[in-house]
Length: 113
Image 1 (cartoon, one colour):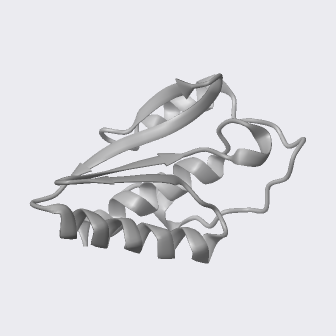
Image 2: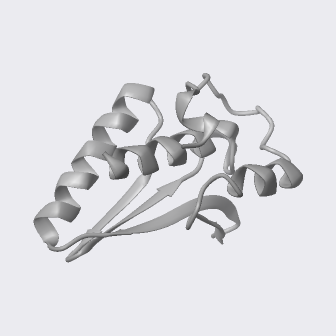
Image 3: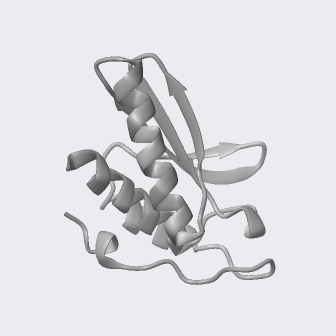
């Protein structure tokens, strides 16, 4: 498991810097199957988690929701039959912060339990 999973999110506010592209690339190497995407001009991290049915996908979405609430950092969550898509980015800076990579690692850890 990556070092990121042991880190905690830090408070982030509008005006804080986005993480540099070089650092994004380095951190993304620690997050298998996560993709750096750009949606409506906003850099984001996204991963699709497969499940056997809708209930498992929904249970995982709820677990990620609890994780997010505990960190006060919230993703976009899409639940479909057999899969849950999680998308992390920092809304206040309209881009990626180290917190997003931390939460992606914690999401992977949660999925692996």
